[in-house]
Length: 116
Image (cartoon, rainbow, N blue to C red; front, top):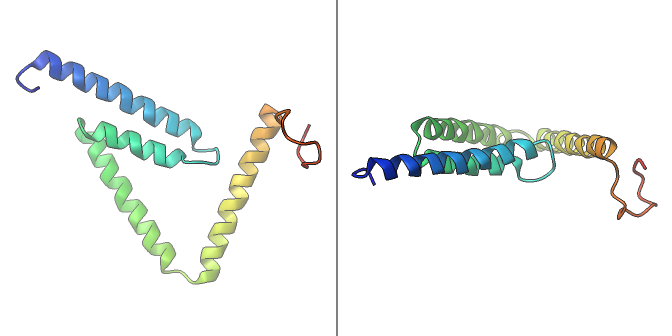
């Protein structure tokens, strides 16, 4: 493709557009329970196939995730449990706030203790 500059430019533009859309979807889903960060990293993988800055950002992310994982695994069990509880409380809080802002779906049974 490098021999055909027009095709190369179009391909890079397409990769940039698709990767940016994937990253945007990931960023909007980060506060929700689910794979928000995974989607962002997948978008960075797509962008890194053509853009050096995305490759550097992906490497930066990999280093920090590795460092965080090593730190957490080196902690005593009670610290890891505290991290799990804090994460669960945060996710629960996000779900409650989202349900409060958006409303509880009609398909949720009435006995579930949520705002109506």
